[in-house]
Image 1: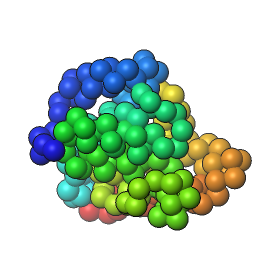
Image 2: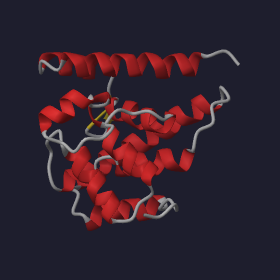
Image 3: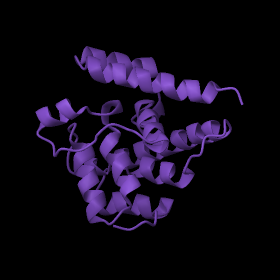
Length: 176
């Protein structure tokens, strides 16, 4: 595994090499653009954020959609990222972006390897949050995503997304 982050161009090339659809790539680009906007707003409040990691993590968060569109696309994408020799922080973003995070109990019920699937670092949280605000390649209000999760009987995931929203908004509004 490398410690060197790929460039934006290398990340997009990796999506193409893995046969991600143009729709997945345009979604990833939209998530990256929003994630960078969020990172910039947070950085203005003196939060230390690895902007390059946010961009590359956002571009690659749906790498696993080259193989599956199921909830396990995060796990599949993390394996692909590891195979490509990407740095661990990128792998973590891919692994933890789904549903505002997946609990250990949910991961076990899915039959996933024992691991942490919740966003922990600020970069992981930014990408997970930005992903929830982009439907296909268009920005949507967070309430739309929360409602969609509730209608799918994913009440725990809806609550995690709501809490993630509150955390990011609070950090953005934090007085200097």
